[in-house]
Length: 150
Length: 150
Image (cartoon, rainbow over all chains, first blue to last red; front, side):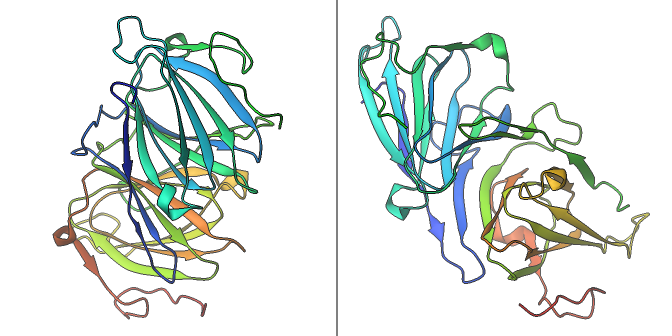
């Protein structure tokens, strides 16, 4: 397990008019503050990778579709440095509907596993700041993961 | 215009892998704090009404589908007491993708306008507390609005 990552199942409350899906409370374990909420959509088979935030904690849930989330710990001095982890997140499979908290310094990438557009909600701990994110191409050999072709 | 309600268009940033949809920042005008993020889904034609929060400010966006939002100001002493307002919110019509901030004391109801499930995201100013919400049936005559049959 990558040090500092939180993965916790979330409730979906059924309702014939449309369910309610929990996400994040300010008293949730691991809550890192609220800076900005936004949505990243992922088309079927598409890959968005790699990105690493230097200060922002990502607080994610996937209320539509299904997404593969791959994390790689490249933090110097981290007890889990070099660890790669994969999560499947999304309300399309109710057992996969969960909160994922990703601290700064972890490379992360997403792939759309659904036949429809997936929606990743991020309640980020900081407002967007282009200067605190680093990027690598999806096939960069520094990260030991191969994305399948779209 | 109902006093204290904020309605502001939000950006959708196109991307062939899936767009990014803005929602709310902690420095957005009208930001009322972060208590809990959750999603309310609305099936086509379904109505969820009426509810009024006594302390919570709702901070809404609709990243999927299209929703009719009806507001009624029943606050004693409000300059806009008795005003009814209707908004159409949802990324399905990019011009309708917007942030809607609803202060406490406003009756609110939702109806699904899309042919698919709509998703309403609420970054509420307080965590859920069943004691701070009041309810009325959708056809209660205290609110001068008639919902169409589903």
